[in-house]
Structure formats: structure tokens, C-alpha cells
Amino acid sequence: MSRKYFGTDGIRGTVGEAPITPDFVLKLGWAAGRVLAARGGSKILIGKDTRISGYMFESALEAGISAAGVDVRLLGPIPTPGIAYLTRTLHAQAGIVISASHNPYTDNGIKFFGADGRKLNDQIEQDIERMLDEPISVVGSDRIGKVRRIDDARGRYIEFVKSTAPGLSLAGLTIVVDTANGAAYHIAPDVLEELGANVLPMANTPDGFNINRDCGSTSPEALRRKVLESGADLGLALDGDADRLIMVDDQGEVVDGDQLLYVIARDRQRNGALHGGVVGTLMSNYGLELALEQQGIPFVRANVGDRYVMEQLDSRGWLLGGESSGHLVCLDRTSTGDGMVAALQVLAALRRENRGLRDAVAEAPLVPQTLINVRGDNRDGFMERPELRQAVSDVEAELAGKGRVLLRPSGTEPLVRVMVEGLDGAQVERLCQRLAEQVQAIIA
Image 1: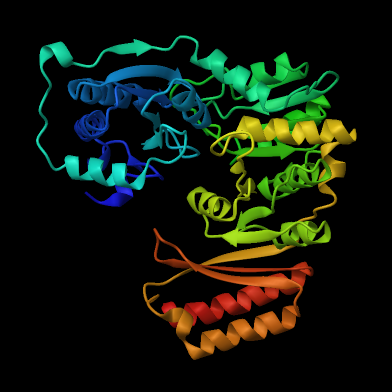
Image 2 (image 1 turned 60 degrees about the vertical axis):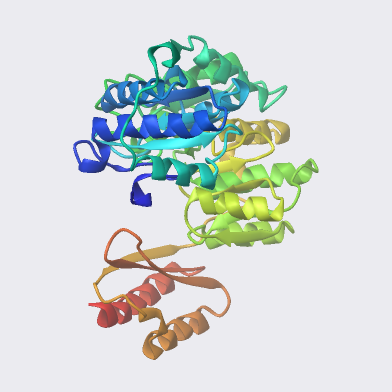
């Protein structure tokens, strides 16, 4: 079985494509149940977002797991980080997420959490993959797994999220919250309201088809308009499974994950709770690096993807990291990226300093960044070409230590992402175009 369909990044594909058919998902549930049962496992949780295909895949997983003799607990629509939390607190052997995150409703995916609320153990993953090659065999009737719905899953998760910002009061704040018609539609507004905020919810009426459609963290325009029209203090947007966060200040300016990460890091530093430094990615804005450097906060870059951020955090014993997309990890609060937990950390920082979001992020202005995708099939060894190495060297020399160059081949498409950052926007655009033309000449 190809690992691109299974593992920490989940199964990804359009509904109807071979890897995502219900019979495959049924067998995946059976394989997971068999492997976990052999390790003494007796209970697996299943949660999902709001896309229509979630019903179908939930039923298929439920049938497969119970056929393997393992009990199932159904959580219903709940954020991905909520499933991670409940897997730990309900002492399940695994938690399964049915979601395609920020993708449209036509996509769906499956991701596993281990008993600790983090990615499933690599050995268990490999054992499940091997089990997929075996024919399905159902346990005896007296051993078939039982299925029960956890009716208070939503309430348990709401209380957990609030507990990550003890003493926080949002009284006097008007907050617009865009739940992307996704898994947090019935959670995020209640969290903020129970903490005292005047909440203006939007994109909170899922119908199975409108998840992430012109809303959420990947499409913040509607949120910007709502904040400006309502005169709100700020707005926040989650994605379909609520593990990403983007915010909007009172002037309608979008605040991305890099700047939010800075606000949390600076607050942790002031309170003596940072414990190390901050992990970003290769795509984190150079402005974040400069702002953290000015505060004396160590910063390192991981490869793009939350799993690589987590690897860096674990290897260094640090607690805070994230991506520009708004996937922020606060390991002193929870075990995985959580949009609502991150939102409360930002709001708590603002309350402690009695300042607005716009004022707080002014300390970490993003520098101009130009990104050009260059298509071409001849990418093998292109980075070692002398003429390209010279072109990169020339661009870096012109930036004079006040910018950054990144060439990153896509792992899924025949293209190379060419990015240049610096303090002068016109210069950055010119240099990026020049470098992109050089890459095009090599890989076309």
C-alpha cells in the first residue's frame, strides 16, 4: 500500500477515486482494529468534520473496526484537535479523524492519532499497512465490537479549550468568528461567548457542501468585511477541521500565522514560560525571524508541514511552533495544532497587555515576499547546475544579508516554487522574476 494514502498526513483524494472508496475505508478500519486489538486495544474514537461524505466513511470505519472486535465511540462533528484531546482523556487506543481540512467538500481524508493525542506510532502505521494486504475476517459474534455515541464530546472539548487560558475574560470585546461551515461551527462561538465576548458568528451553518467555500482561514475576505461593517474589535477564522487560525484586526487587516506566533511567543517570554525558542518553516516570513531576533528569542526553520514542526519541537524540547497558514502548536497547552487554543493564547496575551491586535503585531511587520511557481519536468539535479547556483548567489549578494531566497520543488506537482523576501518590495519582485526565469530555462 502506498504511504501517500495513509499516515500522519492522512488519506487524501477526491471522493470516488480508488483509494477513497468505502470498501477501502472499511478495510482500513478493520486493519486498524486488528492491529490495535493485538496490542491490547479495546476502543477507537471516530470524529469528522461537516462534509457530506463523512457520513459514508464514518459508517465504513465503524463496520470495519467492530468486525475486528474493537469498540467504537462516535464523536460526531468535532475539530481535529478535539479528537486528539478526547483520545487522551477517554483512554482510547486511537482516534480517527475524517476530514480534508481546508479542502473543498469534494475531498475527504482520514488521519489517525495515537493514545497520547499525537501522530500514530510509526510501527503501528506500518503494521496497519501490512494488515491491509490480508483478507478481511470477522471475529465471532460474541466478540463483535460495540458502537456508542459520546453525547457530551462537544461540551468536554469546549471546557478543555477554555481551560488552556485560565482566568481569561473577554468581556467588552466584540469578536467576529468564521467557522468555515466546518467542524467548529457549534463550538468556537460558544467558547468565546462563555468567556464573556459579544460574538458575531458567520459561516456557521454547514449543509455538507459549503465547508471552506468562500470562508474560513483560506478565504478571509468575508471576515474582513464583517469586522469593518460591525465595528468589531477583531475577527478570527478557522479552517474546515479547525486546526488553523487566521485573525483580522479592527481595521480589517489580515494577521497570519507568523504574526500570531510572534504574539504568543512574546507573551510567553514576558511571563517566563517560553522554554526555549520558536520553530517556523521554510515558508515563514523573514519578518518573523527578524522580530524574534530583536527580542532575543531563538528561531529555527523546519520543512513545510506540521509533522516537521513537531519533529523540531520534540528534538529541541521546545513548546511553540507553527506555519504561516495558521497551524500553530502550543505544546504547553495541547498535543497538536489547535485553532481555538491558539486563538485564546493570542487573546490572553492581548488582555494581559491591554492592547489591540493591530498594535501587538506592529512589532512583527511582515517583509515583502514574492513567490513564483515555475513549471517544468526536468527538475532532477537542477539545484546543482552551476548557472543556477551563481544566480542564487548573485541575488543573495544584492539582498546584502537583508533578505532570503528559497527554491523548493513541489512534492505533488511538476513545478519549483521560487521565493524571494527582503525589505524593498520592488527589489524583491525584480529579483524573484529574474531568478524564476533562470529556473525556467533549466527545467522547461
